[in-house]
Image (cartoon, rainbow, N blue to C red; front, top):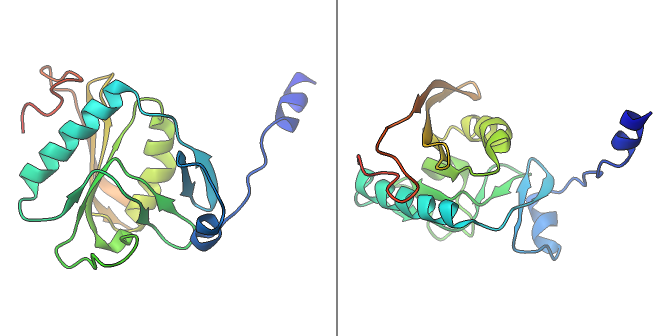
Length: 175
């Protein structure tokens, strides 16, 4: 009986296209994922510090390419996401309002409270979009999930690192 009541209280998702989403007045802290609008938590300090370190690491890894630590990317007709950091391919159309998944070289999500979402829905969508590399950083657990080589909507390589030197303050000391 309690389970039935809990199911009845679940929010009902409303499906949107990117165009529908952009036409509606949503708060700044939302993201359109596979046609569903999700609230995004405010960033904690540990999250912000890890994003900054990821951005710095990407600039070193991809010299001369455009590395962004803000802005939305479009993954298909029903997804407009705000990765924590990403690298545009050299041939990307930089005049486009939102870069396409096919124009991304690498994406980073810092996951303090969103790991299930980042490792589930987002990982699958990034792989389907053919983004060559995807990092999920868990600064509070000192973990880096390095996913690469997408094929048939999945990443063929996924490695987890646990460098002893990592802390929230110097997450990428090794780069």
